[in-house]
Image 1 (cartoon, rainbow, N blue to C red):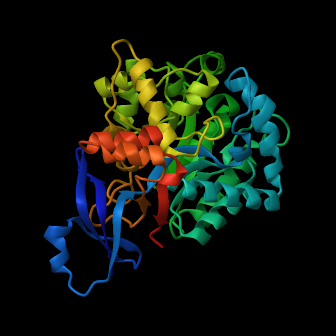
Image 2: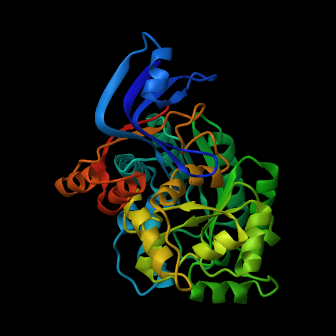
Image 3: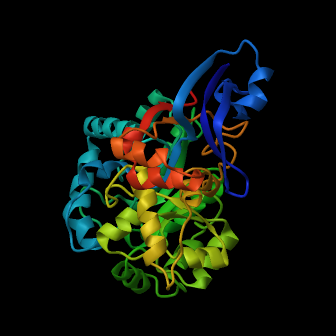
Length: 425
């Protein structure tokens, strides 16, 4: 076992932050031998109970849960910062041509290496990520994550229509490939599989029906897709699925709304959509930097609170503009303040941080497993330096309470704050 002494951040069941300025974190093997949190709390209360356990002292540092990115595109690593008029033109001009290159396993391997290195450098220890329509892209990413000991969930994109040559797949083969990938990777070490229709307009009824059948056959895998991101996309979905009550209801009609289903964006919802999310246990991946960059709209935090459904934060790279959870949390704050019916929603620093850690774990159905530093959680954690830059050091030195400390990190922080990443391997 190994103990760490530093400030300690974790979360209670109600989502509020627990903070010990002089904290104690004990890590040791769990039932399966993987490192888990064995004890967490104040140094004064716990340290004497573990005599002889080696302690690493980390003065002026904060131990925090590893971040969870609920929606990110690994093959779009090199598409970040590509200018376009909106979502659909951006896909056609940049994304689809670039994703076509992932039929080459060597190319997919190279991008997977950069992608995972970037995530870890920014403190993201669990991503839920899209691959491309090529099975080789999934194999490359899973193999690289397994080598690093990361917890990662990914899936081959399904898109058998309205897609250009090079990324469009064939209906029956795509479903066979998906099942083969589930059998090959799901539950292997720390890896999970997500059935991944790109978005409803890119899939025929037969492909969506097959995806729903696979979801029923493998209830412990995840589902991920996009919904209600862009008004042009919504109009298109209504033309293609005229019998569905809404864009979101398309997925429900094919058996793709349930626990462990994560839908990116969820911007242009009404209360019936929100009730459908709540009743099925599906969750939203809120992607503020992407939504701002592409001009898609704003996630309605007030509506989500009023009706009540699960959500968490996501970078949505490459439509998103940064791998940094600090940048994503700050963009979510802007969205809460400006993107609602006035007077808006002021998201607390604790809640923003929760959305990227314990709240995201709850959305994935992995509450108590990742995204927290409570006893029993897998020991994915960060060593943060609140003095990483001169201005940040000056600001955090004057923080009067936890909210001011966390908000200083959110506003002024970046990858330099992440001094070290520990993975439960």
